[in-house]
Length: 116
Image (cartoon, rainbow, N blue to C red; front, side, top):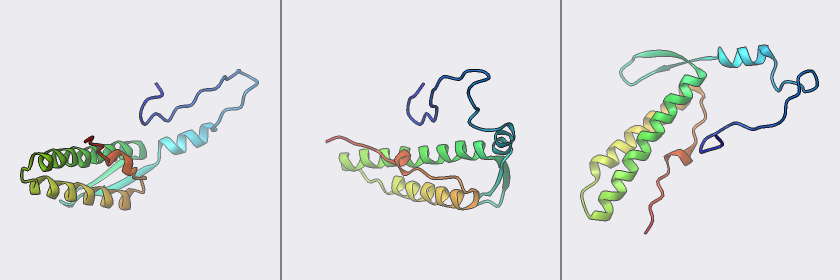
């Protein structure tokens, strides 16, 4: 709990005294929010907003994976053009996904911190 990307916060709640942060209607509206995405192959997918955030996390993970590989190859003096192409592909996918769904992109999740 309270780890990376955790969106929880904690406070005491007393039945009958405390007010709920969101009404049942607001929670239902948020949970039922739908977005659609058409991928590069023309396949259209309908998903909930939450599912869209998780899809974007996966895309960001792929960007990070290829950035890490590219950095390792560069440090070792090995050709990394394949990895650079994959980085560009996944970043383009992320841009397109964000544009179509409206999910917020967090560039920190794509960052690779390599020590020297």
